[in-house]
Amino acid sequence: MRKFGLIGYPLGHSFSKKYFTEKFNREKIGDVSYDNYPLEDISLFEPLYKNDPELSGLNVTIPYKESVIPYLDILNDEAREVGAVNTICLCTKTGRMVKVGFNTDVVGFRKSLEEHLEGVPAQALVLGTGGASRAVVYVLKEMGIQVVRVSSSGKDRAIAYHQIDDGLISKTRLIVNTTPLGMHPDTASCPPIPYEALSGGHLLFDLVYNPEVTMFMKKGEEQGARTVNGYDMLVYQAEEAWRLWNR
Image 1 (cartoon, helix red, strand yellow):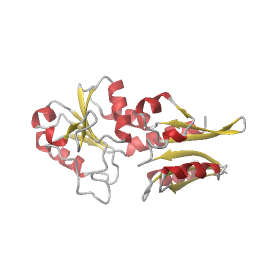
Image 2 (cartoon, helix red, strand yellow):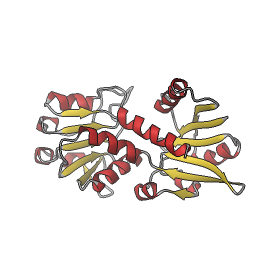
Image 3 (tube, one colour):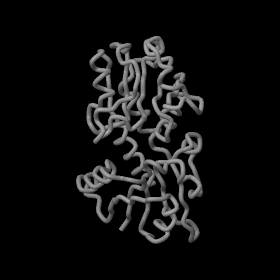
Image 4 (cartoon, helix red, strand yellow):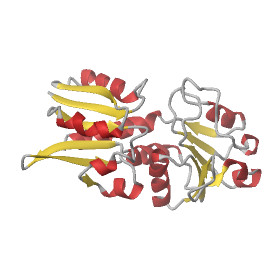
């Protein structure tokens, strides 16, 4: 049996396990399984794959998208440029296990964003500076969009939330939330930006998918902004991971 799964900690509710289990059933894909592998420390990654020769591929989530990289043998160009991995292919070559890292968040975000853009904006605000935000920034820069990164500390070439004023909001028509703010069960939280400065010309993209409408999105919609959650992005990145595992 070919085994696939998700590493991270804690895992809790997993989009990936539900999605792939339903995919395998729906498409009648046999002799495969998908499970969660909660690892309290990234050092447990090595015994995980060494002790299970049937393990063929893994997805990676918080907090290991960056810390897993030293354990891998090869990174594809996008994963290397982004500096974060969310998909690993495990294959045997000349009797040796080879671990190859990819970032399918790049494909997922690009496809989902392109479906909702009405023209390419000159500038975007990216809220958060974690592994997911790196994929977002990579895509935006590839599209020729100037990126203003935002973090709570205002460090690492990012501005702080208190530096976002009405003027910056009014000239920045795309705002992407890559933080977990608003994710279930903390559904009442949202990034602290001046929502009153939003208008119908704005697109708010939230990487959170649970709940379907986050507080970030709700506050944007109240000002007439268009919104999209992260569900389609997750589907696209999952399908790209499956394609890579079956090359």
